Length: 430
Image (cartoon, rainbow, N blue to C red; front, side, top):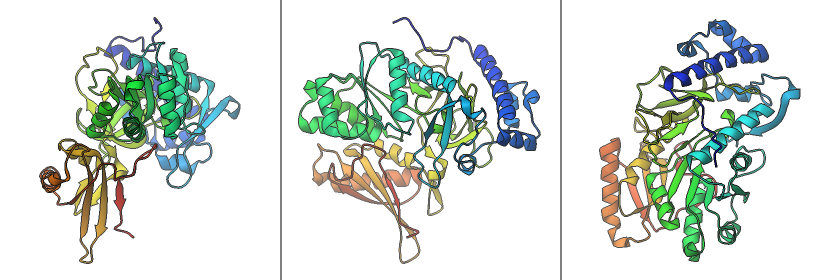
């Protein structure tokens, strides 16, 4: 296969020139096509002619999820309706769903950079890709399929859930790549192991996303399925959908498509840039998006830029895995805690599984209490429970400066899901 979906630019300077060209176009396009953006830019005292360098990005106003909900059902629309060929929507956990419009060019661009994900993962046209994510108004299933077809591999559009069918397809079609959520990946890996069919399947790689996942969960999936690689794929409906980046085979960070959007990492409180390598909120500005462009959109996702060059040699910069969301932060006894921090602590403890739950309660004394429910590893005897409890409690105290009650439960005792797993249960306001 000779076709490449990677950007033609070869240097950082060429990439920045391409970004500046895209930024100028986006501001002009949004200003002329969207009454919302024109009003917002006028209020900020900045117009298309004021964008002369990438530093001028910081003069632009922010856009938020509330802006999308307030303008439901067609927020940020910057083209006439006759140019809109499709809509997609987010899952909408609170209030109205976030609905985004797409032109044909938006669909073509999305397909192109999603095919880049498969190229980054070093798939070949001989690969058979089982897509086990949701179809419909969601952005997931159709994007995995479009990118795979453009790349030239064979797609198996299985959809989510239905473990009987997923296992049947793995055996009968000899799928080599599985695309799913991390929770679905664990569920499937355990089911393959339970059925004793690992030697009957040909799975080599997994591309997973949609939720934060721990090192322990990844390691468990890899062991159960005998995978060569697991690739983390980010994405959100506002920014086209899944496929906005991928980690390469060196797994040193997620290469993001900086020729399609600019990524800023800002302090969520001050909204000022944080030093490279430090954690902050992802803020994105699109460079080519027609129907619903984004100007400094606050994603609420927390990550950091990975400094230095990747061993793979790609010019595309990297961000780390997602730590969590700025609005997912737990305030416990005056300490700010992100679930991703607990992921990190638990991943360093031998003898436990990858699944856990955080339960927050308020006692009769008015104080807050945290219980951490953790699965014992399948190969570990319950006699080690006291040792594991003490070890986890000590590590949480040492690294996060809080005291928690730890419960060790049997492997498989905590619920599995083919979608996103719920791990935080806050009962304090009930």
